[in-house]
Amino acid sequence: MIILMRSKVLSVLAVGAAVLLNPISVFAQDDVRNIGSIAPSASGLTGINPSTTSLGDLIRNALVIIYILAAVAVLAMLVFGAFQWITSGGDKEAVQKARSRITAALVGMGILALALFITVLMGQILNINVLNLPTLPTLGNP
Image (cartoon, rainbow, N blue to C red; front, side, top):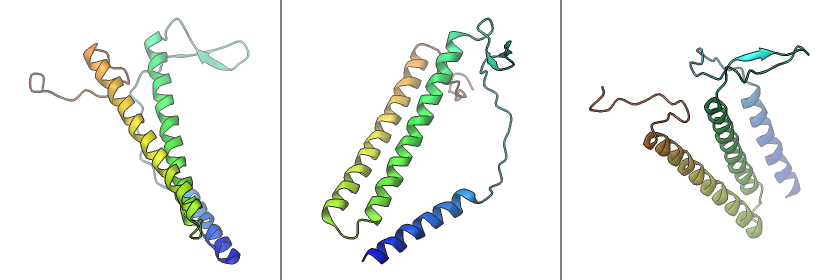
């Protein structure tokens, strides 16, 4: 039983390493968002120049970073819950733990989507493009 579980763990790790280490072609383009200007400092390191970076840019960048980190955390919880389920070996308590972790991750994903929706909705109500998303054409403004 231990050897079978050990081989499952090793196979999951091998597949994960193969996926992560596989070179992937990326077709990138320039980022059109305004992230503020970067000013050199006396130490040679760069920082944000407060005279050309607005508070809105800082809030927008902070929100984007928070949403990205939350999405990565949800993905990690889903993967970890699935890994727990696979390696549970039929133990009902371990399966229940994995199931509750996956359920919590899905609830977190729903809360994250709802928070993003509310942020964009409030931005549209206040006529502020909070996350610098491209605007969709409407019937009155094609």
